[in-house]
Length: 201
Image 1 (cartoon, rainbow, N blue to C red):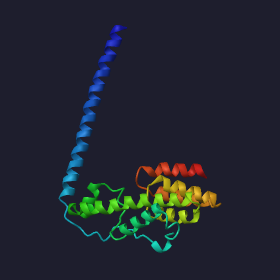
Image 2: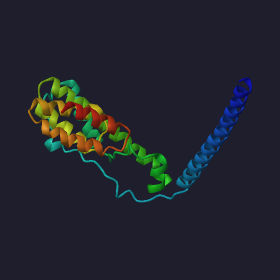
Image 3: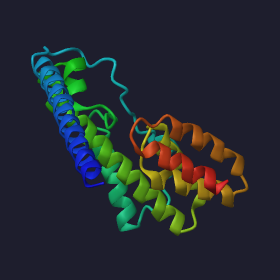
């Protein structure tokens, strides 16, 4: 019996040593692949940015006059106007390495600026819509949230709040559109948002 336990222990430790060695090989290969790709990306020359999905803020269709005297809302609108003066692009689902490969390493700083502007846009739209909703302006909040979702935001609160408004307006069927939009989210948040929307139906 002791011999069996001893033999089993030897086999286990041999298997463990083999597995650890194999895992290390896989990890080393993955790291080499990453750095090879990163080196290639850093050597990529500047390329045109014409095919980026630039976002234009549709001021004409947004509720700019609602609660315009409110200090917070006035600040949100001012933020949107400032953002609109420069390019805005949602690049949240593309790694820096892929961006450099696609558009060239020299463009990474300007692309990061475009994406930072988008992050501020998504956050501002969410805050603005929540403020409108709290004040009872549900149709206006809906308009803001629908624009936010058209930019492919992955802010879960935007989807859930809009779904809540749809339910309150008796438009529960529109949650299907939100689910479809959530399916198009490339980041890891998409599945969670979709599941929460399904639960709200």
